[in-house]
Length: 548
Image (cartoon, rainbow, N blue to C red; front, side, top):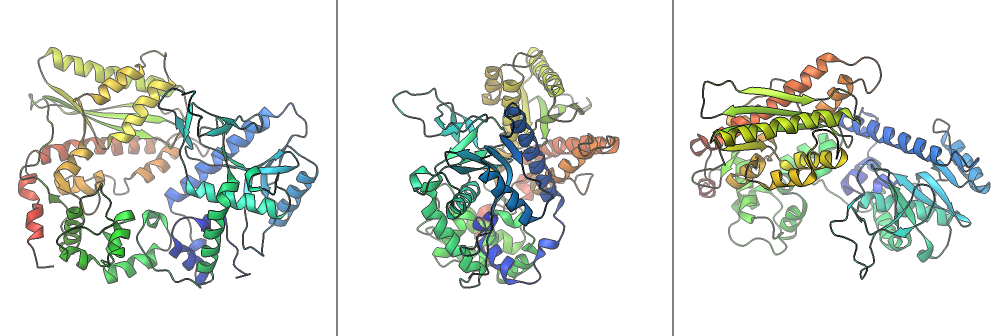
């Protein structure tokens, strides 16, 4: 296996992808990335650049302490520059490249090497959240499990104010970098107890410190297995997993799975694993199964849903009714809400659609609250405050008129995150509600999640996303390319994130897309409480079928 050299990316995720990557001459890696993947790469690059500039500024009063290796130079030159900086004892080495370890089959680079004692610890920079605020006050009798370091220096300290959000891909990358540093004699210690690494996340407010020495046994097992897979010594086969959505090999794996009606097409994750372990490998076998679930079936999932999903896949049924009469909370005054955000940078648009069900002749009006200042921006506080003031006024007006009120969204997790986040980030600014006010609204009966209502009423074999379910209710988006990923590209053009002049046409496109989302939620809600009982077969009807 001497010729197999793995990057940290090859250590996590789908094993079959690794086998295909190393076993086929026609590797799809040369194909252009899908727009969504390209956007995420650009956002990650922007984040790394911002962290680099932040660290350079922090250490600007220490001449020679911070050195950035030229990312445009040849790989060999980057390695040479990194080793030279290590020899010179530079405290912070940005864009560090380590020598390829051909013997052990690994390569890697660290956004940062930080000098500790006579060696270096690796620090990686990622564009996702790695911590969250602790939910409880610090307990002096229980030491914190999280260790963090400030950005100004390597000073690992127990942190009682945050909790970790573990990420296996990050852990394996840190372990690989640590093992490579040990191999070339650049680590602070050769003892596993003295080995550490760090991660700077999207908030860039600290370095989360990991005990990388404790990871090494697991890492070496993963490395050995993945190298054997890459060398075609361990057979793999396709299975549908989450990363299939963006994998270039899906054009090969997808048809193969459909040809054999692989059960992973309708049951993924722990469900799929439990089925395969029980010998249920095809959709047909699952559809025909009656009785108890497999031994390791996850307790949070209803097994009958998986069986019905398999029958639905075979019969082309898009939705299956759980209840004899579907139900959803309705009100006199109904406001549909949909939020648009740009990555982790903020929420730039709160779209609303107001319907007075007691006044059928009254126009149904779409109203957006938006900032077109590029995120992050303080103007986001202004647009959010205006949205909250309008929503609060509508709630009050309905009560004063003796009418019931409800606001609706589709999958409240995203909206709740930015409702609470906006209250926290802009606390004290004009019109911004307190966190307690937002929490009271979220907990009230007046905030209704149609996504949850869909799950309570229906089994959704092809997914519960709005764009999967609303078309069954007869709704169609005006833009054929409408999607969350596409909206990110439209936003970049709308505010000229890539330079140039803002594209006003893309702003209109985003507003139209947002309006269609709130109208889709309205149509879906009305359909659930109306003709869904006639349009959608009941689960007992599917279980009684044999013609598939």
